Amino acid sequence: MASSEEDGTVEEKENNNKKRTKSALATAWLTFYNIAMTAGWLVLAMAMMRFYIQKGTHKGLYRSIARTLKFFQTFALVEVGHCAIGIVRTSVIVTGVQVCSRIFMVWFVTNGIRQIQNEESVILFLVVWTVTEITRYSYYTFNLLNHLPYFIKWARYNFFIVLYPLGVIGELLTIYASLPFVRRSGMYSMRLPNKYNVSFDYYYCLIIIMLSYIPLFPQLYFHMLRQRRRVLHGEVIVEKDD
Image (cartoon, rainbow, N blue to C red; front, side):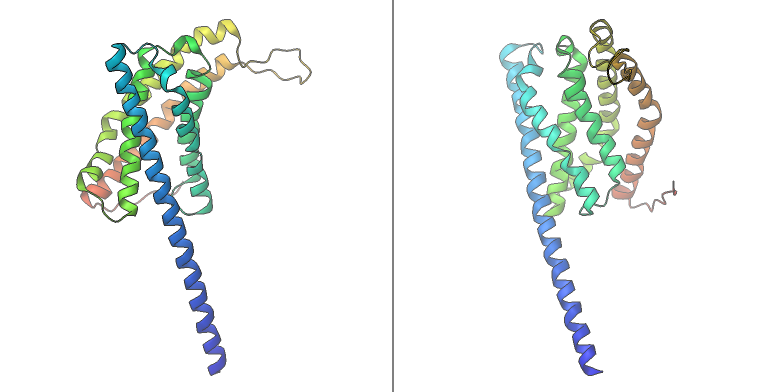
């Protein structure tokens, strides 16, 4: 009896040690990742400010930062992996939708349609994304280091109230501005007949994406408002099961 109890205790200790090691490695990786992403978006912010100060116009700004933007925004796909393997306790679906929608805006709208790159709406969502991401990643970094300044926490759960709607407006106006060019060029579309016997119209795809903001935006926005009440005011929020 004593022997089996001792064996059980040893096994338990080994499992606990493994869990602690995994937890430490996950924390170290997440800290490194969030520091890198904070730095990346700070680089983007400085590049945008430098361009505007030197040129005095927003025209050409997107092209000047496109490579850096595409790298850091695409690298955010790692966050979906974080949720999938459980080192971050957030919905894979919610994170996936948010990350992929950003990547879509960068690669398949703004980068793919050069005629719209100088639109004011592009600058609007770029500025919003930049402020949001610097705030968000710095919040995660300080939180992981257990040294979270109140201002960072306050900014994380207050800036979005204005920035989130502005970002959505910028994205929607950018997609809307792209529609005439997409329709004329037929880009990313497949017409019948073709060897795959499949038809796809990118123009209508963009319209459907714009319409999808109607149900999705309120859900994500009110979710953030609930999180704000919980974090800043200590309210206990009971989430309804889907």
